[in-house]
Amino acid sequence: MLRVDGVTKRFAGLAAVNGVTLEVASGQVHGVIGPNGAGKTTLFNLISGFLLPDEGAIWFHGRDIARMATHRRTALGIVRTFQNIRLFGGLTVHENVLVGQHPRARPGLRSIWPTPTAADRRLRARAEELLEVFRLTDYRDRRAADLPYGVAKRLELARALAAEPALLMLDEPTAGMNASESRVIAEEILAVRDRGVTVLLVEHDMNVVMECSDQVTVLNFGEKIAAGDPATIQAAPAVRLAYLGE
Amino acid sequence: MSIYLEGVLIGIGINVLLALGFWITANTGQFSFGHAGFMAIGAYASALLTLRAGWPLFAAMLAGAVAAAVAGALVGWPALRLSVLYLAMITLAFAELVKIVFTNWSAVGGASGLAGMSGTTLPLVGGLIVVLLAYLWLVSRSRVGLAYAALREDETAARAAGLNVTAIEVGAFAQSAFVTGAAGALSGHYLLFVNPEMFGAHQSLLIILYTVFGGLQTFWGPLLGAAVLSALPEVVDFLEDWYLIAYGALFVVLMIVRPQGLLAPRPPQSAPPATSVEATPAPVAGAPAGSRDAQG
Figure (tube, one colour):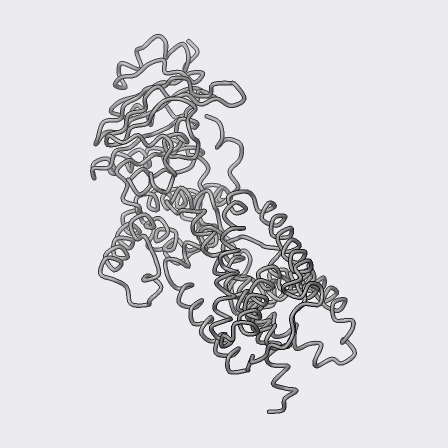
């Protein structure tokens, strides 16, 4: 569904991402790993539209989206999260999820009228479902800024899924978590995949990547050094050298 | 009602419109320092239409508001894509430019301006305020209102959530300019004259003062702020020539005592929840994303 095709991004002449090609198959979890500075987040920003590539194409369902505005990519179903959680702190948990539905709700002048349309009622019911699935119902009217870390992480996932993504991009979802919390997130990622959402996972934690991913791409110094299923990757000498320093 | 009282109430009402108009863009997290420019455009456009084309005031006011909204969109489009600081500088320069253009344009009276228009009544001003409040109330309860709030909270996260940041901000800025233009039109037709000096930087600052004084959290804040600050010189006679200095002092005191403004239903930050279900350090939520977002 997603094909990154020879994409290069330079910052002040230095290639943060250099001719990277990768293909994400529908219905899979695709992990992207690499040491710090490998270009993972740059790649992530290029796919989500926060950066535009200097060279190369990004194909999504047969369309080149490399220069498309972020909100149009979101409308196509590409939705991302952030490494450092970014919630709307002053809004409630419920309101955060409602904002997440923006690409589906597409509110215009009609939405100002107090009686909701049938489509909007369905979306609002869906928001309540999401709160339940992610165990957020008890926090529904709490300000997002006041949430404990783990709950905030769940809310970020719920908000991203509220956009009904075809491709969910997670930027280090287990950053700052201990092993048992990471396991919970890993299970949630697999549950998301099982609901038919393709996941692109940028992750530092090798265990999480190996546990969740169907395919893994390894970056180092902005270049792809290996790709394959988790077992192949773990055995590849180039990866062990770059990532594990062996 | 005495003519004096009616005049005072019209003056207050126009300031309330100005504050509400300013709030529309402030509510999306964007601050303009040149709203007097939009006021001037509304005032001049409507004055020309009533004086020289014989239009009724209401139609001329709407035309002035539309002209201000178009100017708002043209100024906002480039400025809102950049940082908050750019918007401040560009709007400030824009208002000065508008003032200079009107000063040097002899067809609209140059430095002495235009005179002779009239027709602003209390029901007209009051009716507009009621319609505007109803609109703002409906918007604030809707998904559009949520989108504005999301932009104010975190523009990057809003972009990731699929909001067309530029279009929404420019839309709000144009609406803000529309209301400000309408208020400018009513102001000119209330004072019976307009000249470029009326729309200097001090006027832009007064509009900001009304809004921030009342509080930005809801539109009731600017309503209250404008009403209180513009009634003050009427009630306290000796302020007549000193009111700007008094406002300044009042503002400094307010910012020390109550920085969120007079009206603030929500506290600036609430205490962390008493029972923390997950025992992990909390402050990461909503914390500014550091440089780690930019690298990989």
